[in-house]
Length: 61
Image (cartoon, rainbow, N blue to C red; front, side, top):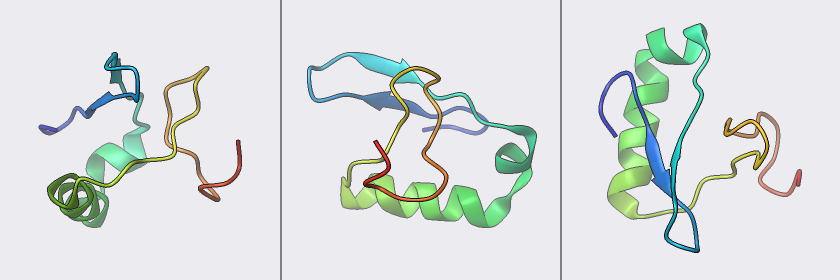
């Protein structure tokens, strides 16, 4: 993760470049949270078609 990009690795070892909207790119709280998630080595809910973070819930898929 490096501003303004987030690169994620899926469970199969493939890398995904996440599509962030302009609000996410400019949101300092968003980046602080993403850094903490990365440091904790947690998984992120990502839409497999658009490579975007799920907006509402981790169980939305």
